[in-house]
Image (cartoon, rainbow, N blue to C red):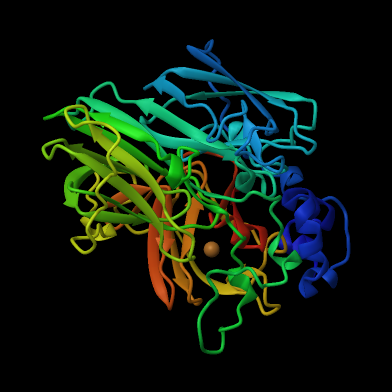
Length: 482
Ligand SMILES: [Cu+2]
């Protein structure tokens, strides 16, 4: 294969993937055959397209984040890397329209960067190392600046290598001036899969730890579906024995902002004694819809309103859909009910939220006609047993998807593997069905999903599976404005 054809050099490839990716690439036949060429990497591509600048106004709200190895706290392993020594990282909360400044200090032994997941920031602020910015070296700092718009529930996380699975993630909330739903109180609930040891790339694993192998059939021994040896699932950084408590008052409507910050876990979420009124999907408002449970993949968010009309002590359970680890738990604690009793677990069954239930309030302008550009992509395992491909190409040995500013872009994805893929687009929201989202799970076994977006944010943008181990193994493309 030819470097120019694929628009990225081997050197750049190694930089994009980070250290862990080097081993993965070493075993990648197609790349091994490629010849290191000139530096025709993505950041150096000669396009006339200049990304828009970040806001020049002074920041209305400023934050600092220090990324560093976890302190020697009893429950936190030294392999856990944290923002400000907390798991999850500190909440960043801003008002709609404000200019936010975040000063990142890197005290990790490796380079890093921060991605503001879901928020359509200027390209240079998007935090993908070697694509939208130079990585922030160990000991250095970087000033992020973006406008907190549109409002919604987001999160931020490291986009370098496998750092997300070390604990480098935290919630990012942009408050609406005028919410479309009434509520009295709110909590942010960050779900994660907890890995006590340093993450390893799929190619380094021996395959014995997989809790979610692909099942029978020709793909039954799919190493591609590597699942790290998680110690368990956490809610707001805590395991079920130390479950976080969410106090509610009789009659109140409580908005729960659920964030799936996991690297490889789809959760099913339910609450004992209460249905959810789903009010937002990936931060964007939807017509409120009732459901007894919902599932969501890595990178997705749902806001759910719970009406406190059933006094007691109730569990909010988040169970892995694949993987055998026990789930995460929180406690919905009525102020009127004596504390300290064991929470009542949710019943199974009931109605599960479907994507088809989501009707966004508002729409994306300029995507109601015939698309200007359509991409038909397949999602499939690579032939080597651990890589993941989009239309047969394993990133970074993969063509960019070229678009022009103003285009109505349509991407159709067909999943030729048995496992679901939560596909995430940087820098833009897309429509999927009647919802507006930034991450969508494409179901396994030939599941198909079509997304449409407006090319209104110039730059080179990452489009990838948000299962970190699929991303690491090549399930990504760059969407390039030309
Ligand atoms: Cu995937």
